[in-house]
Each structure stands twice: as C-alpha cells, then as structure tokens.
Length: 392
Image (cartoon, rainbow, N blue to C red; front, side):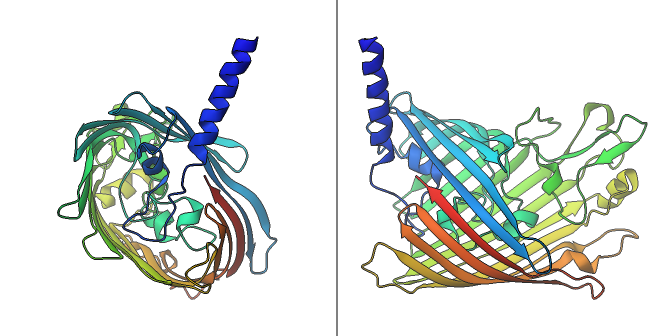
C-alpha cells in the first residue's frame, strides 16, 4: 500500500511540475505556441504532461433569450517516449454532453528541421484553426470566417512533415489527409449530401470518426517570421471529397476543392493586429446539387481585419485589450448552373469589445457584434457576448 501511495504521489508531483513550468502564452506572434506545440516543445521534466483549456460563454442575441453554455472543455495529454518520439492528444467535451477526440498523433523528430507526424491532426489553414485556445484570440466567439469558411475546428487523419528553418525564418507543414465526406446513400434509394450553401464545407468534416477515403488530399503551409513582430502565413489545400463506396462512381457524388489562405499577425508594444483571407474554388457543384438537392456554391471566400490596443502599462502582467474586428464572408461567392447566388449567404460581422487577461492563462471577455447580410428581407440579430477562458 505504501508503495502504491508513493507511486501515486510521484505521478501527481510530475504532473504538477509539468503544469507549473514557465507559461508560454505570449502576444508576440513569432513566439506564439498552441497547445500541441507547448507540450511537444520538450520543456518539461516529466514524461507525462497534462493540461487543459476551456471556455464558458453567455450569448445574448437581440430580442431573444440569452444562453449560458460550457462551450468546450478540452483535456490535453502528452507523453515523451524518448528524445525523438512523442504522443499528443486532445479530448474535447462540448456543451457538457458531446465527447470528441480533437487531436491524436505521434510526432517523430527525424532531424533538426524535420518532424514526421501521423494521426488525427489540425489542417493548417488560417490562424484560428491551429491557434484556437481561448487566450489566443480576441472576441468571445471565434471569428466567423474561421467557422463558416475554413471551417474550425478542422482536423482529419493523415501523415506528413513539419519543421522550421530558423536561419531563413521559415516554418513549413505538409500533410496528406483524408478529405471531406460529400455524399452517402440515404437508405431509401436516394443520395444525401453533407455540403450546402449556408455553411459550405463544414458539414463534410469527418473528424476521424470511421472516416471514408477514396482519394487523399494535400495540405501545406509556410510561415515567415523574419521581420520583428510580424508573422505571415500562406496555406493551401487541394483534392477531392470522399463519397461512400456504393456511390463514389455516381456523377456528382464528389466535388473538387482548391483552397488558399493568407494570414498575418503583428505586435508592437501595446498594439496588436491580425488579418486573413481565405478563398476556395469548388468544382462539379452543379452535378452535386442536382444529385443531392443541395445548394452548394462553386466558390466560398472570407476575410477579416482586426486591431487591438492594450490599455494597461507594458510592465504589468495583466493586459486589457480593446479591439475591433471587421469580417466579410460569402458561401455563395459564385455558383454554377441555374443556381442563383443567395444574398443571405453574403455576410458581414463587426465585433468590438474588451479582452482582459487577469493572469497568464486566464481571460475574461466581453463584446458586441453587429451582424448583417445582403438579403434585405432577412433580419440577422446583433448580439452581446461574455465569456471566461482558461488554458494551462
């Protein structure tokens, strides 16, 4: 019994040590790490590393009841097998009732600038899909562009390489993934489609859940950090969607996707800014819509610009950012065939508010969103939002 108690105390002490190392959350985009990068950085005395992030939100649409929600709680686990091989996973609980594996991969350091990675991983597109911990972005909710267009949290099963060449200030990632699921038989002699006009590709994410694969897709990103305070990203994603075995040869069962993204982050003293642009061209959408009865556009695009200023002196550990973000995103940027562009899918959001970092890893947020679209007949409610976020 004493031996078991000693082992449990040793494990607990190792976990505490892992959690209380110097915090790596930073507002310098060149040094910013996400949850996986922090745990894989190797700056831990223990082989077993435990962490978490989560956010609790209050959303009040104008004219409707407010909603309180534990939107997500994510448990982080890492294990270092040796100096080269590591494992990382995120277990996400959404809305206190749904459980997902958000990431689960093995990382092997092949050489100084080369890591081989395989498993369930984030697709490197834009900013927030990779850096979505609540202390890393302004606004109670993630940007809509990173929800409707990208779509966050976008992860799939695959294998690839990543690394950094510090002498030329360049980071790279390149992966082969399974793709979005587009169609399946509905059991009644028809075919159901997962992709649609209102949210583009979002419904086709397979998330590692018995994922079907017909043809692999290719994803890559380059990050340049050679200018002080500035980080630039160029992303690409190319391939076809995946249809179920029994219908994959049916005309319109699959579409082609070519997506590119540009992003930038900048920080100077108390000022920070970020922005991104995402565009995706979708081929064979006319045949897809005919087959499934959907209204998928042949192009989706979105962009945003954001600026923030820390209202507290630089020397203080606490930070209070006042920020404003303008977003424009359209899931019917173009359509094929007889499908008319739906003006309700051409949307703009203006978000302004405060982000109060009361300690490294703890943030309190409040903002107001002015929301609109190009359909004069529709009424999109504005909204007031508050939230608490943690990451350790």
